[in-house]
View (tube, one colour):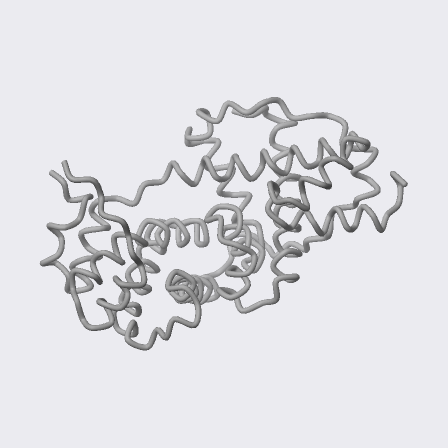
Length: 86
Length: 198
């Protein structure tokens, strides 16, 4: 059963879901019998987390926010912008 | 200091459609960071991200009266921004050659995936040299895969809404996401093997 390619394909298909979703949780149980698969999923999760962490490091510059309001002719609303809290 | 009032999107959109400037500003404040990040990851370029941000919100202000509420407001806005971003990418020469993405070889995984990665020190990820490598990897992804990865994994948008934004089927979204994740994992693995994590 461990080497059933159809089963692995199904696992692969499920990997397109949220990794914490219920189907993936069920697959996780199966993966305990397949150390290689467990390692693979762990690496996918870490890859996504690395990118999420990196993405959170970029802040939108305050200057860009101000210019956006100006370009939208919403300069009278800049005062309501928390980024403009000075 | 007063707590931030709850963001009642439906009401704010309705007010914005009536030309309420304060409501328009609230929508801009709510979504600008996400749209900027989307543009930044999609194009890998701050100037392009700013252009996408401005163009997307200009269209929003101009066409918000046409928004019928058939989908959520953010799906509508994301679709505008993604289309601008993809158009921008098409108009520029690619930094990297197109690569062909295959499905992961599941038979191979069962036997070859034995070496675990160490636990990541996520605080190191903010350091520029490593960030640059991550950016280079994501830029190698063909646009159609990169977009799905950004929407699903970085912006945590559901498969259903991602499909609506990109106007593709949910199955297609899942396949593209699987291939994108697998590619990035394989490439990250090469970096880790060669240079370690930081």
